[in-house]
Length: 134
Image 1: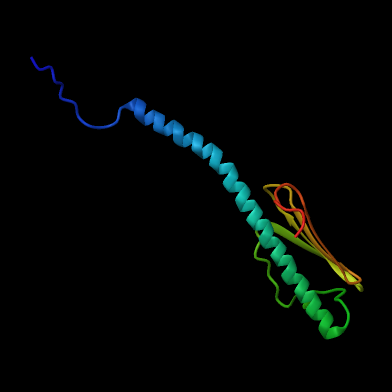
Image 2 (image 1 turned 180 degrees about the vertical axis):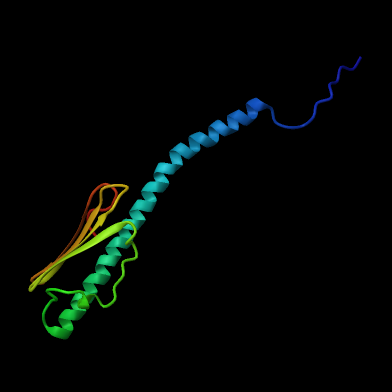
């Protein structure tokens, strides 16, 4: 006597739940890493924005033999690529300038580029930057 059951192919509810649980576990591991990666790449792009702005100040110096001390004419139409995520500030003085980019939200990150009497200082503070020197 052959007791063969006729079963349809497919997944059981338990098998589907196991797959859903595994996907949820992988997502909880991957999402923070992805978020951190995005924040670090935005911080690097903000540092590049500061370099571009610094080049505009140096270009102004080359043309006028002095650093800009006021106004926005020296920026030369500069527009930050990371303006949605960072605020940019500048402090202008006769012997140089200080440029900073500060993350608006989503983590602590402040990037700086300072030129003072020919001495260049670059740095970054905060966990969301992913680097401290550049």
